[in-house]
Image 1: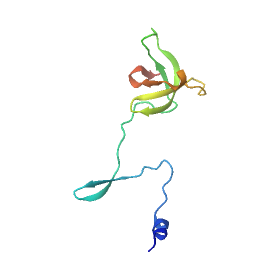
Image 2: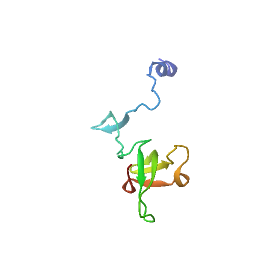
Image 3: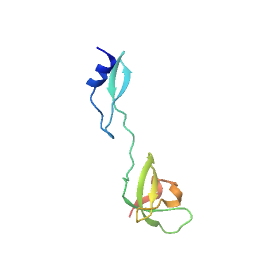
Image 4: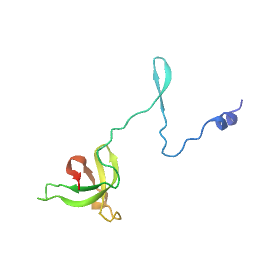
Length: 97
């Protein structure tokens, strides 16, 4: 069986589908998935931003994306412009609007 034939028999993976990683445990390979800790906000959630410079919360803003656990990029309320050129904001400084 040639390499081309084996590649044709493999199932296609959809974009955004979770793919198990292979990890060596107990002397053999076992498929395992890694869980990435999530935050409490999701894209398009409406939030308020608290900063040391402001006495009252700023916003509302929309969550653009979670870049790393508990770090977010914000959009203006119309959803078209990144806040402060895409600066990252910590989850602790955000609250639901």
